[in-house]
Image 1 (cartoon, rainbow, N blue to C red):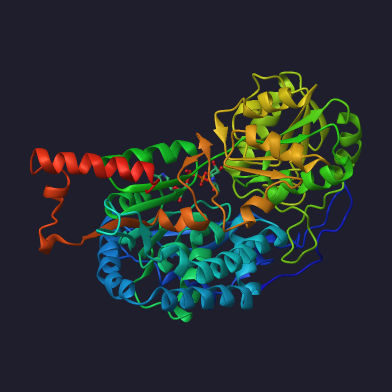
Image 2: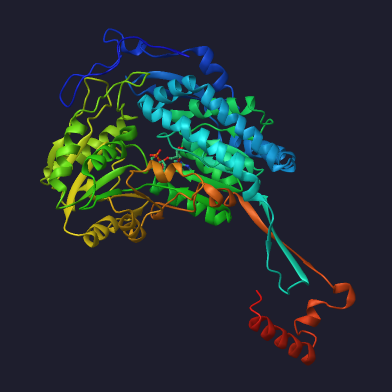
Length: 547
Ligand code: NAD
């Protein structure tokens, strides 16, 4: 798919000049997305071509990457109309048939991963390892919903109003057209986290990816078609916030992943339209190392938890809370590991960490670190812009003594910056962890699993990982994932994630009506005698412990 040259970055630690594969003589030519790759993808955007072109950038160098047409607000309405027209035939197929298409899609993503990984890396600037997380995630998620979807969507019997006489079942019906709005940080994972269960449930999907990472989403659309998805069931509209707002204006459910600020706007519009909304928003996630923790394991886990995808990960750790008994021992392990991390821009597995995705991300990271230092924070590792590798590389950074009024103490940095804080007890740790407007993810390290579970149960976060940073809970795709407080609304993954994309419909069949046993009579509307009969019946049901 691409051409690249040079040698990947393998050099040691902080301050060393790590050689990325960028040709210093001609950095723009180092990575090329061939026109024959871009053109068929770009053609998939639903557009009348009046809205112009978007030019994306290669984060590794800042050079132009690709151009594709964007959609107008009218194009969004057209896309939703097309999706709506195709959805009933899809919903009429059996769940198993639909699930089989999604299973094939997951297999194709795995089989064609090398193309996908190149594309993800070039659009986002992330390392190959972080890109592979996305491929693995889609493969795991599609398998899960392909296997469990039929069970999640099966009719459920519910206790009838009157035992024997009322037969009640709950059906799950697709909502119709699900809109998905995705950010740039995990362009494959987050384009499909709701799209997969939505399609298994019999919906059509209209996706609006972030402009910087639209080609990855279009690549997914191509594979969905190859997997056998009929036309118009997964449509991609391209553009910025106006296009996202138009999607919210037309669909039957909106699944949004992005910042809390935008999430509030999407929720407000969904509220006006009275459509369902699933909102996966920001975090300021804590990791606690308890007094009995294996500090070496915790340090290794923390490196991945803080710096995967250069910290541009909603569930990544930005606050480390250390029990004072193990604080020094932990930092003695953790800080050297952070300093040894290899930064690089290779389209291979040589780098631990890639670039930030944009100048805006770099600006935010630099502002947070400078602000913390100005307020008295100490830099234990990193704290430097690595322009020697590429324009938006930033060293993985550990800050100590960060005062509470520093921006990075409370706001989401969404970069490779973590602050350290010491506590004297588990109780204090829980207080510190919960002292945030966010509540997305948390991590607890302890040798005592029962203690880990007890602490976890007191933490205000949608997912808590004991002896892992984030992958254990995120990767447990059969269990719900989402945020408390300002981190979101609703859940993805598991039964909750697919039920959110359906309407529950209760169908009750009343027996005996033709023999005069109508509910009017039985419920007492018919007068004094039926009222007495019903009272006696309810009393008997209570005694017999009937539902
Ligand atoms: P963002 O809110 O700026 O943009 C997200 C998407 O929303 C983009 O596609 C954008 O074009 C679109 N958008 C912008 N304005 C809109 C509007 N008014 N109506 C509809 N759509 C609109 O977020 P971002 O900066 O691209 O992403 C980073 C944020 O996403 C971080 O806060 C991160 O924590 C969060 N995130 C959360 C999760 C999660 O699962 N909780 C996962 C990944 C990222």
